[in-house]
Length: 328
Image 1: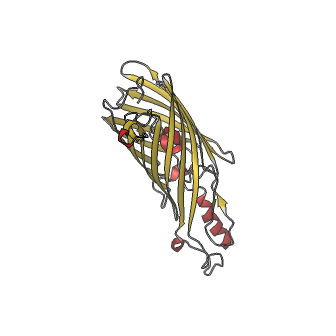
Image 2: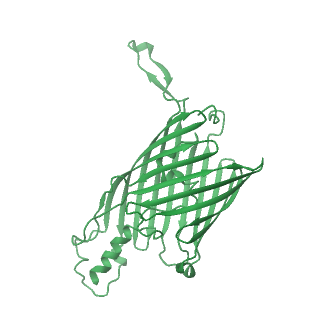
Image 3: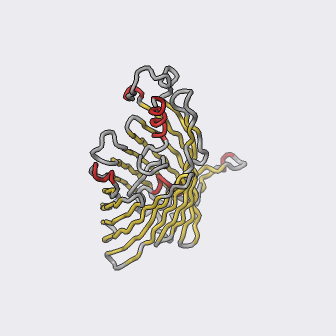
């Protein structure tokens, strides 16, 4: 029984968000504003340079409830960038355009905290975008590394001197991995498919008596279509579906209303019996989003819901940023 306590702690690593049984990756209710966090092909898809921060508090009111914090950056290498082209005659070196505006770059930092277990990591992304008339097909590949930690000093056991918690008990472990994504974009809709934890690397934490655990591969699908109702209003139904390798799917089904391309609000239903309220505002290049999750399951009676705040800033809305038809 003593050893079982340690096993439970280690298993928490594989469910750090404590939101989906069998899923170890963070959830985002404002997934449209956070699309880059789940699909590396999104990096630079719109031609802007974007900075994004997110803070999510799960189950407010619970002591040591899960918390997620992230910061990301993404950009597009535009076709006005230049490189030096070497000629056979040294004096004939000259500048030429280095790209056709097809390369996107991105990076993020994320920190998950769940009771005495924490996970901190970073990722760097390379994306390539292909123009298809009015549409765009994007591919992205990300390399990432995470540090997993257990605060052993805060652990409590029924008996002192548990042999599992000894001098060989490792409280820190590292795990490199990779993500891959595909993203298809049209002026009116988008669809994306991505795979996280491609390598399913092992995580060794705890004592030598505890077997290694691997980070399971996760699959994500997202899409949305925006209907123009009038000059002022647009309606966007969308969905985010995700599942770990052991096939435990979950979905968010969302309906959002945009007003004058500046305000939005909506409702989302998550298949773990949660309802989500979404609101947001855009002021120039600044985007602010807030979501409130309320669970209809029994756990919803013992907390004040889950809260998520997203702040994004996009720069480059000027003559250098080409419109959709002119293509970046």
